[in-house]
Length: 135
Image 1 (tube, rainbow, N blue to C red):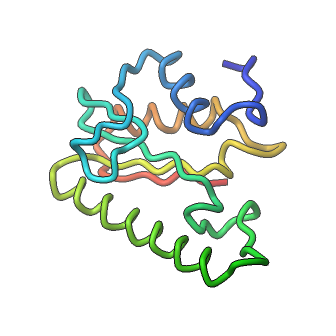
Image 2 (image 1 turned 30 degrees about the vertical axis):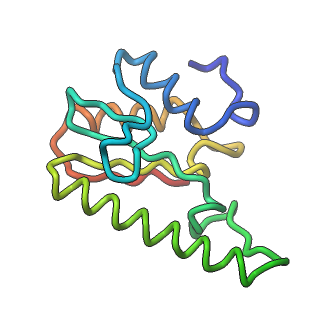
Image 3 (image 1 turned 90 degrees about the vertical axis):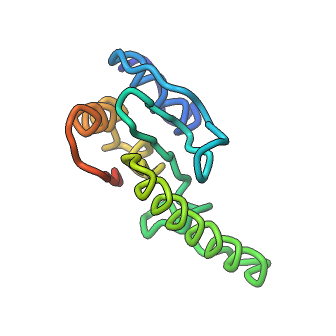
């Protein structure tokens, strides 16, 4: 997995490649599930959302409040955050385990796609209902 350069690849694809390399098989964007999760692992009854820090208003170094059109962007980001919570709750109520991987965990000098994949793999093999992976 170490040959993949995180800055050249979309975060979702980094996670997908890493999970596949570890032997996990999944579906993508199952529209039958709330929020159409990025990665669906039916065997583990688990889903993975890979969130961009800007689009989902994450409290990290990658999120900067927009300087222009704030009246458009700030409500949009808040709606995204509300939808994230709503979808995760609906999935949990339906018996799905929910993982959220933030873009900041995959970007930067100290970020490791392999480390994120290892944490996800450990969670998938366990019984915890939720996990959030951030920088």
